[in-house]
Image (tube, rainbow, N blue to C red; front, side, top):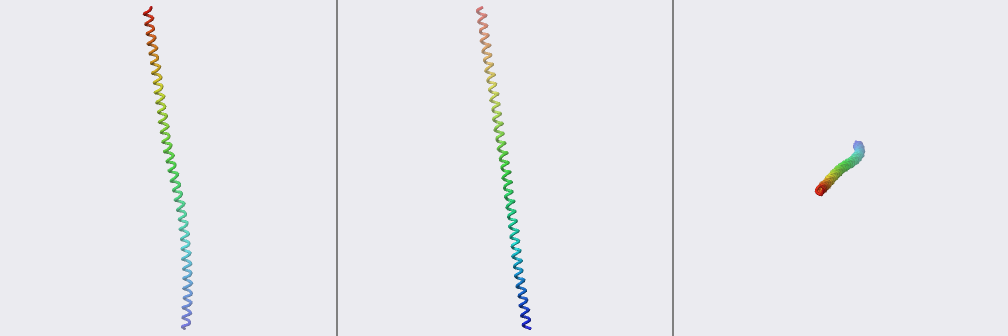
Length: 120
């Protein structure tokens, strides 16, 4: 009977050892699967972060471009306005010079006419 008990105990121990080995295999497989899933998640997260960074860079470049265009447009408008003002001032100066010359000529004409009248 003791032999039967020993055999039975031995058989149970063999079954327990096999169960432990299977449990270890399942644990390793589960851990491997989790590591693989985590690796895939990490890769996806890295890709998403790179996409976000890229999008932010594009948006910043677009904003910088808009700011540069606004600044350039403002400078061009200022220069154009300044040029118009200079042209207007130049025209006024030219007009004033012409009026002065006309007055001077008119005065000379009147002086000449007076001299002719006096000599006549």
